[in-house]
Image (cartoon, rainbow, N blue to C red):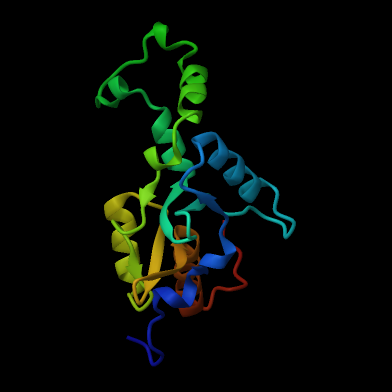
Length: 176
């Protein structure tokens, strides 16, 4: 290991205050609107977050909804077989699924925060392991059992870049 200590999850996480929040009483359609606004209409340039936090009536976080959880909700239950060809009767199913899923409660598609969460003092390699194992691009970060932030694959990849490029002195190098 190098002279400086490795960063912890808290060093690269996005503070929870930077995320949009929806009520657990809202519909999937409501959450989709908030997700869309938060991702596509950023005034700071670039793209926003691909997830929103779901809270209870007192503002306590219960879960999160991501682009992936919305898309997973659209997949028909009978399509989850591994080797399934797409028959012609699926034509129009996307629209039908969008409309029907939009009416559901956000609680039906959210990922509960307490199931998979990192501690603010966890190592970055633990964050990598959790993301790969659970196939998630964003994970909640807790401190003293309270949600304090989110860590995304973006921040982890940026850290990988900084370590690799910094170690090789390639910051200004043109490759390709």
